[in-house]
Image (tube, rainbow, N blue to C red; front, side, top):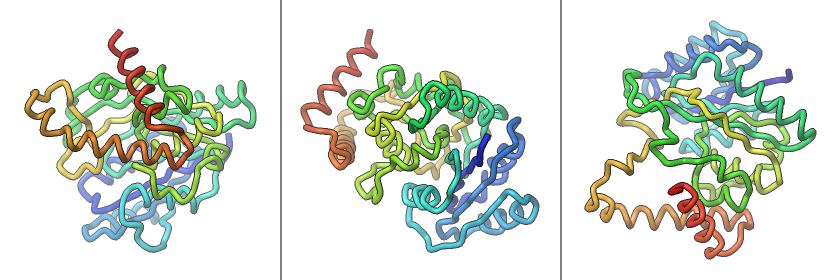
Length: 275
């Protein structure tokens, strides 16, 4: 099947870290290794990591300077580890037991039909609270994400449509990633766009394979737009403008084209979703 690397980035994650790591070792598919880099934790995170490194021979702690943020930490892990397949792992979620099994099966199917191509798969998530109580069965429904409309570089540039903890991609996809990634909004969308830009294959798995925990320390969380009042939406206009500017600046760094092109595909995506 090939060497599979789970890349775990940590920072002050003591509250939920054990539950996440345990969910890796409960996977139905077992042929993988974990590579973790801590970003300068001041709680018990590093001690927890040492416990698992002592317990399992496929759990490796990488020792190099702090990267100062989740995006840089994940990308540093990707740069440091050589493997045939990669998965990103957040410190505070929980993986469904069949996550890797289903994703490996899907990407191998893609590779059979597209030999030598960069390939990536990603899935929906179930939104849960800090105690794993279900908030929403599908994050895609909450965020109004329709992956079927985002299968090319032009279309995929319309919005951030992948969540890093649901991604699995092959070595050819890693080779397609543009470094340095200083214009990237986050590591996950940067990598997805790089794969699409190189005419690779990005496919969705239309079921939730991760329990996406929402708590007060989330670096990135779920936007419950449907619950916002008009006043709150007006207040968030400035944030939306800044987010769109940063997103387009990222696209421009990858040679996407004009702002009008970006706005066209964003509008087209919105029209399709309203059908």
